[in-house]
Image 1 (cartoon, rainbow, N blue to C red):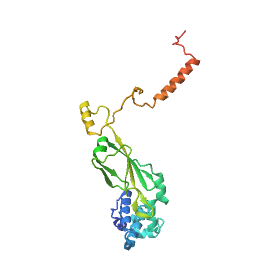
Image 2 (image 1 turned 180 degrees about the horizontal axis):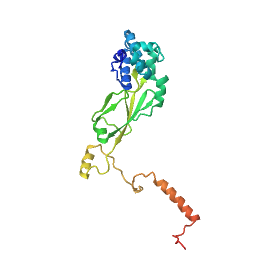
Image 3 (image 1 turned 90 degrees about the horizontal axis):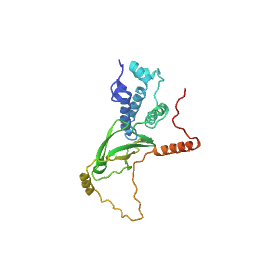
Image 4 (image 1 turned 90 degrees about the vertical axis):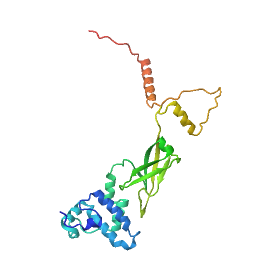
Length: 257
């Protein structure tokens, strides 16, 4: 049973809160009561930092749960408290134990970090590229943001757009973040998705295509799908052909007794 809940109350979490919830709570409160934003809340900021420093450390948290703040002050788990600004800097910008933990983390499934910016790719359908869309994105701090493209606001394949202030925190500017940069991939329909008559109707709705003025000097060629293995097979067959010239292979040999 937890002897004291003051630190949990400071972070506005329950005593059984997970590390993820503790991080989320600290992030929210530290930004809210940071001296740069609330100069008169220095004591509150210090309490938040002290509570997070203890509860984010498994050994200190166990000691606190059994003996309260007094047990921490007596030095049972390395006693004493760090600077609130150092704790803030370590949390948002890396350093010490947190920086080592971050190096051990695997690449994120969605985001790639480049300095203060986050990069991601987003697949959209052709109809969304032409007529708009709304897409939810789950952020690293467990929020959901919705990006919107309005009808007529064309998004082309390979277009790169960004959302301001949704990247990583900027060092020494705790209330500013980098950009979330999104590269769009437009997925086109498969061949034959429309009947010829509907395809003709669609053509009338789109900008007019430019017709080619053919001349007698032009040669018609066929456009086919690219096969990356074709050159490999051709190279292999060429080697086999050269090998046959130097070492002719006979037909099937019958076994002899």
